[in-house]
Length: 300
Image (cartoon, rainbow, N blue to C red; front, side):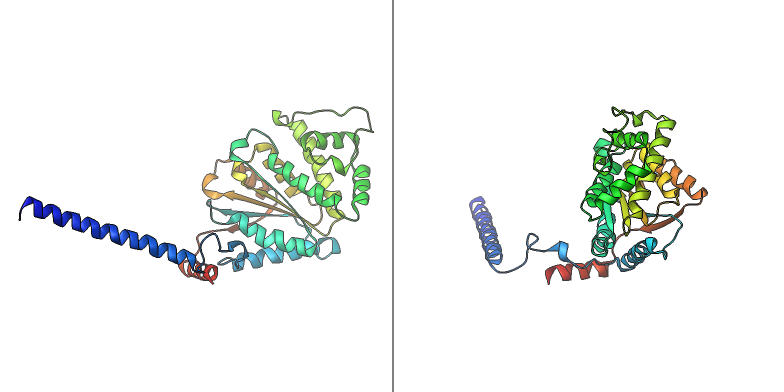
């Protein structure tokens, strides 16, 4: 076979390949014109939460216990609920489906905050967001003025100044400027133990009053693996306080980023030694059968 004949065969093959590609593109366009679902059309948010039934039941039972707290039928012992798992496992989604959504239907307050990996230098960032959210919830209630009055009676001027300085966004819950002159500013990120203890006490008393006036409160802090030491110590202090009724503390973190030497792990061990009950839900990979069911549900 001559070189010219070989070249002609090669060109013919290229032409055939080009024709097949053109036909495939045309078929793809025709499919898109049909009423077939695509990723943009799939309403994934409306799907049933697959593969987490046991976890959802556990969360619901704890929420029901929380709702009975101020009725005298709930637990007096504080419990910390931890949601662990690697990144992308659905920890936050589980909390939203299992706690936030049903809490709203039950008249229970849900307030959350999330740590940011790129903003770890700012102390209390997640707890500030959570308490700001809780403040907005309280101020929207019919008994908001009673709660404000109770807080003003329960907290002294200094305690309110401490909260206002460290937790911007909580000012609507009490009055400070008209009592005791100018407001003091304290640097709580300096590692001072006295400042930390004052803040911890003030926040505990604030939550005690709020929770006493509500059916229940869920306080959720996400991405604890990036939390600052001051926040972790504050959460431990709140967890160990048995005076606050109807409060559920929930934290989520990436277990692969919290080794035994991590501040969070150290504080959790210490809290356990001090008598804190810790319940842990480990969120892992979905099984193959669950993934198939999820896909089938999405395409239905």
